[in-house]
Amino acid sequence: MSAVDVIGVSKSFAVKKATVVALDDVSLTVKAGEFVSLIGPSGCGKSTLLRLIAELDSPTSGSIAVFGKTARQARLDQSYGIVFQSAGLLPWRSIAANIELPLTLHGVSRTARRERVAELVELVGLTEFASSYPEQLSGGMQQRVAIARALAERPGLLLMDEPFGALDEMTRERMQAELVRMCAETAAAVIFVTHSIPEAVFLSDRVVVMSPRPGRIRAVIDIALGDVRGEKLREEESFFAGVTAVREALHGAPESTAATNAARGVDSR
Amino acid sequence: MSRLRAVVFGVVGIVLLGVLWEAYKAFGPAAGFSAFNTQLLPRTSDLAMPHLVDMLTRTVQPTNSSADSQPVWLAVALACLSSLGTAAVGLAIGAIVGFGFALLMLRFRIAQAAVLPWLVLSQTVPLIALAPLIVAWGGRIQIGAFAWDRWMSVAVIASYLALFPVAVGALRGLQSPQVAHVELMRSYAAGWWTTLVYLRLPASVPYLISALRLAAASAIVGTVVAEVSTGAKGGIGRLIIEYAQSGSSDPTKAFSPIAGAVLMGLAAAAIVALVGLSLGRFRRNEVAT
Ligand SMILES: Nc1ncnc2c1ncn2[C@@H]1O[C@H](COP(=O)(O)OP(=O)(O)OP(=O)(O)O)[C@@H](O)[C@H]1O
Ligand SMILES: [Mg+2]
Image (tube, rainbow over all chains, first blue to last red; front, side, top):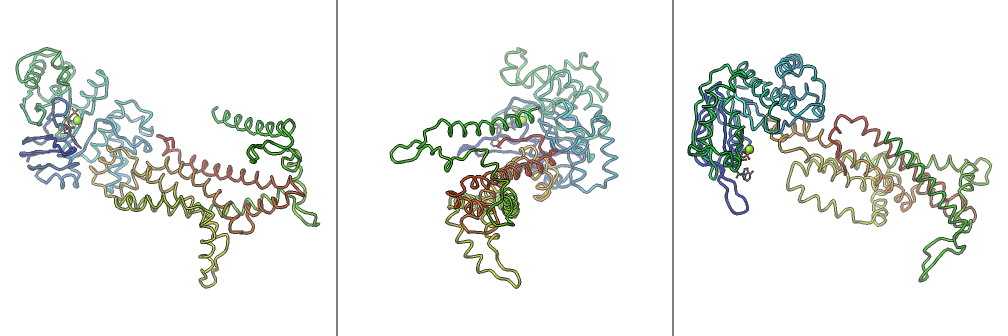
């Protein structure tokens, strides 16, 4: 069974009499355990698509199934974990208590909770910060806490909206490597929104390239780089080939001027 | 460090005020200053502006000439305690009802549209006009052994003043969580009550503390004014009137209950601040109101 089936989904927003078509007839299937990135210029509807899958909003037309259930049922069943662009930790809860929150809300017993939290802080390498508060952590650390929180209930699907968007390049690459490792451990399917082409290529099994106004899927690019992805990969020919393929799909034609990249709000770091 | 600074500034301010008082008394025009038949600056006679030292000495002397009369400071302190109790009851009622309104407005959009204008309007009704009404209504209440007392009317008036800042502040606090946090709770399939307990209530704490600070001040002012206008016995409001009436014969006495009322306000603010300290965990993203 596939993790996510998006079939012919459109979404428009009414903004002061005018309607903005954020998504137009988008179809996408994500297999269980698959890592799929969404990339495209600002405003092409990446976040909107993610929010529809998370049922934080509902589509104007079309249908969305998550593990064969309606998006609503999937949300009620906690079939997914979500990570937003900002970490969104509750400032009055300690790191451990933040990670624990979904477990607390869903009536997991105290001992089971404590065990799971210990596992998770270990997984994201923050064991000695378990009793700290979010304000005492750096942005990258906070983002790791948010990821741990999203993984707390072992969801089969992880939705991530530019989780590393606010991080510096070095932290970002380290977080990407960690994410690859964590995904291998948890075997969750991931839908990952990003603006960075190398990031998308490094992480994904498939990269979905979108175009704006109205938001559509322009191309889907298979990245066959295998399951084991270390730092070395970033310097390999196959990696660069992936980057080039995504870039060309983004720009619609084989061209490679940095100026147009910047102009379209997509960086090619 | 900054706390020490605040204390120093506070003390300097009070000393400065005292110096200003004495300086004006020493060098100001004896008849004060008036323009267009309006007195703008007070006379400097001992009757209008007694020396600070005289005021202080008066507080340790007996209230009146009868043998068993208390010293003034004790009478003032007892009256302050009584008023403080009434104000606390008023504040508690006002805070609970105000918070209830806030919850109602949070839960139902319509309630916000329907209740908020009335709340704002209610605050424009002058207290003096309200006091006799409430006393009159209260006078009709008699349930078994329970009989309505004057001080209860005073507490009701105090609560009426305390309600508004709490309702408005709590509503703002309950609505303060970021969209991302609200959506996070939604992604956890958390219902309205769960979201309230785990997100909105903790997020509203800083707003509630500053609302309570305002409400406490309002409750004190409400209590004193209501005591004056309802003639409730035992409180500092009554004492202010009583001592002021003996003004011509005993001018220094009138200032003690006024100082008492000020100290009472400070005490109330300090109590709220203590409550705030115990909730420090929730004030990591403190807001300024
Ligand atoms: N709640 C909303 N109300 C009105 N219009 C909206 C709303 N949410 C999104 N839109 C519009 O839908 C379009 C797609 O927005 P979306 O946030 O999905 O873009 P995005 O691809 O995530 O962009 P970015 O890369 O900048 O995050 C935009 O034109 C935006 O203005
Ligand atoms: Mg977005």
